[in-house]
Length: 322
Image (tube, rainbow, N blue to C red; front, side):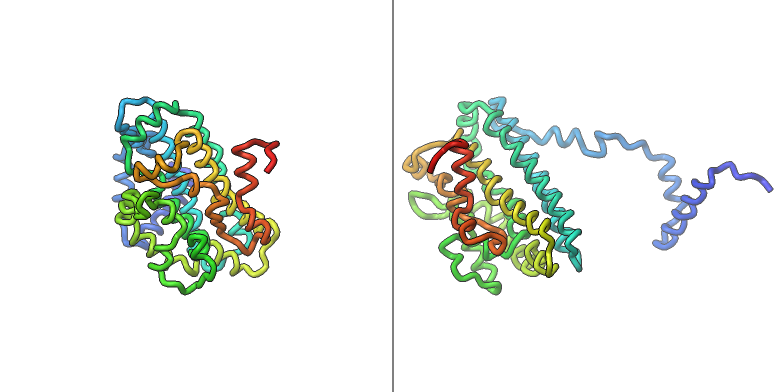
């Protein structure tokens, strides 16, 4: 008997591959021949590094504009990671306490990275450069991040995202178009001078409106809150993870933006109205919008004071007295 020249482990893997390809009607030999001629995978090809590094295309000659572009691209990639985790929760037929905790740990970790990294925006750019190159980017705005709107709609019952004056009588069966027209962030893109939708909002709705309305429909029964309540008797740790997610998404993240806006965009509301802009001073602070994914997890006083304490602490300092 001729002794095989191959390691038994290699032969075992070949047999497993044979079974895999045979089950799908494929010829293993052809795939092995392709493997023989293919080049080794490189790091730069795998992550499309050359393409990635070519995606920064400033509109002006100001050097700090590249910081602005790269940071927002990084932000969108983190949003994509968060959406991936939420999709896994939504697609899980029977969510367990442990499964949801694992996903929320990841989601909260990604939000921590986003919140902590925002200093790149308010410390990493010269104010004078920003104010100049920003004018060349009009009417674009981070407000137009569809992925962040997707995260909101996938995380909770959509009626919790309505503007405060529309939130009194939430109805699980409210028509999608009615919900969409009354979402809180719609109020953040209204011209102060005319009360009309800004071009920023009109462009955003033209590109993403249909997609977001479809998301409202498809996630009515499978958003994170619906999956959470399906568990029945959630652990204290899971409750705390849900609360932390709510805070990170609806207090700490908007507050990070607010700090940046205070540094770069502080202007009188009259001047904002004159340029056809929105009043971010009333839109960004969490205590004005009071967007809460999971109001049932908070006491009445916590909901009433939503975001106030954190804004006071971050903007005025630890020892500030109301």
